Image (cartoon, rainbow, N blue to C red; front, side, top):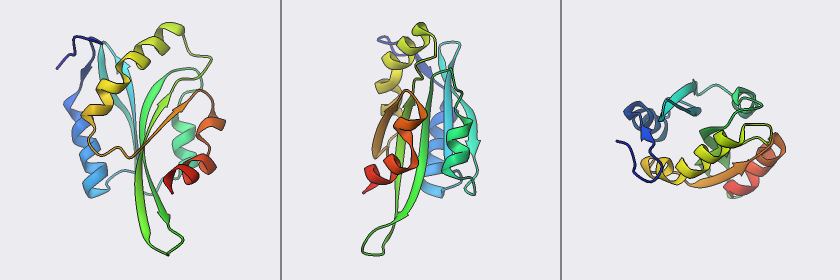
Length: 137
């Protein structure tokens, strides 16, 4: 359903796959892109894939949205998981693209119920694994 504010629709498959990531843990990550005024899935990462493989899947010069399911062990030795929403907007991407992704982000994020941490990144150092670890705790 298109949103009047951003004019952006969200493909139902985005919500379905996100629920599978959240509830069934079928995926480690999902990368989304905006195509023809609609948010669609670009890549699904299997549960075996690492954070490095996820980060390498983001294009160097194009904006994307992504969710990453981060598993970790707390200091009390408890197994936990946090779902990160990452708004990837590299400095080298086109200005128009950055504007479209920025104006549609909140609307899209509301469709994904269960996001626990949000990150905005313009280059890989802003979403390094150390930052993910520190934001999860």
